[in-house]
Length: 265
Image 1 (cartoon, rainbow, N blue to C red):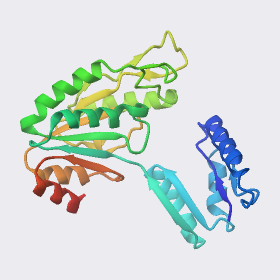
Image 2 (cartoon, rainbow, N blue to C red):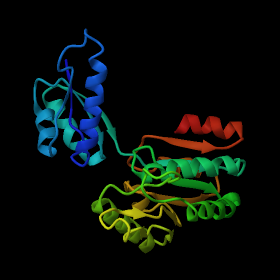
Image 3 (spheres, rainbow, N blue to C red):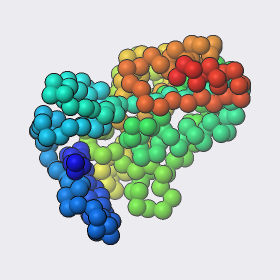
């Protein structure tokens, strides 16, 4: 069966470029049948047509949990199969024994790369109370010096949000976090004069008193929520207490904690 893919309607040029790369590679393999990989570009109606069509035996869909709840029962009703990758609210637990320099580098790379716009972006850090202040002080210093700008420029680490809607959603999430008792560092729009149609922001760190509803909600933007914990078992419970899944990690030099994490994550 051929592979038929429909990308996000926000990325048509990228999708066509990827398809062209595939076609150039496939041309070097005469045994590859024509039409093995096909590209469809359109809005949600195109995805819905693929989902409902009896000739498409397997649907692999990447998106939100809300999208998954719509796709899965439709495909199941026709006895098709689904592969669903739905949302991410990825967490890192930083224990009192962690090597903070190593954790700091991992946090920054994971949380701000691609401006927080990938499903595996780090969105929550759950930090032992004894090292919380030290780590957050270092983290804010690094965030304050991040290079934000065009990803085509040398030395730039953080590019733009994909569109105005992403910026609006980010600002709404930060407002909700503030209303819930959070303290926000960063998050403001920058470079508007240089790029009036682009939405560049300072990545945000939000210190939360606990894991509120806004923390449990995935916002596709560079927002990192920081929370304290006292007992490791509580950190694990907080990590798992979100409706999304995908990835998680722990920074510790305590083997018992590492093994407990592996059994509970």
